[in-house]
View 1 (tube, one colour):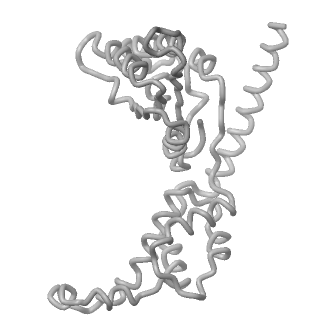
View 2 (cartoon, helix red, strand yellow; view 1 turned 90 degrees about the vertical axis):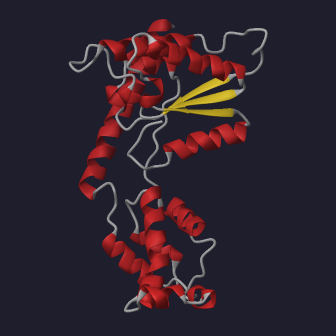
View 3 (spheres, helix red, strand yellow; view 1 turned 180 degrees about the horizontal axis):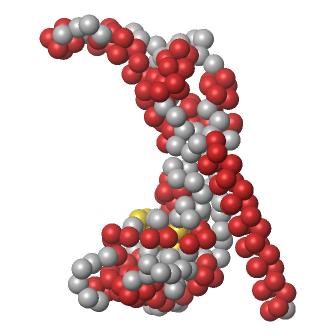
Length: 258
């Protein structure tokens, strides 16, 4: 999976593991790195041994570009090269049947914001490439509703209009907006009060503050999208070009093999 930051790639991986009923193993660069010589490769082997022991399981490698950058890059270190070789070897033989894991698959998912920086051999191992875009209008509406499901809302709050006003915002941005808007009424209520007066406020007073459209408009003025309009256009263009190139290369390889 690849796309801009904070588009829910990790949550999608967790959802896949949950829907498939598999053990979820979340791996980052720090999980497989050690200062001791040879320890990095051992950690990689242990990860896949654990996945086989807990099969069916899903291994999710987050920020894959930090572990498996293209070989021959100027900043490539010997340690990262060894870890890369170990991961490729383990992924290649991940579902070879044994007495303990026969019929219980181990799935590898990976996520990155920079797919063009990954090692080519890893791309061959990861057969499916899925672009995760920023949420569209329908997705933004559902995300806003999900964030507000336990919050009292003003009857005049227009979620449709709010969703249209948040084009270019990621899922994380929408969560921040909903949180900030829900706290705005409380900020107004405690303004000018000392700590003792705030502490003596009743629960009924606090719960009587519905979230209005004005609260969201104020939150939108304070919280800007993680990805700016210019960056978003550049990203969509780059990702689109890269996807087309990858598809052409795949088609050429298929024709050559046939």
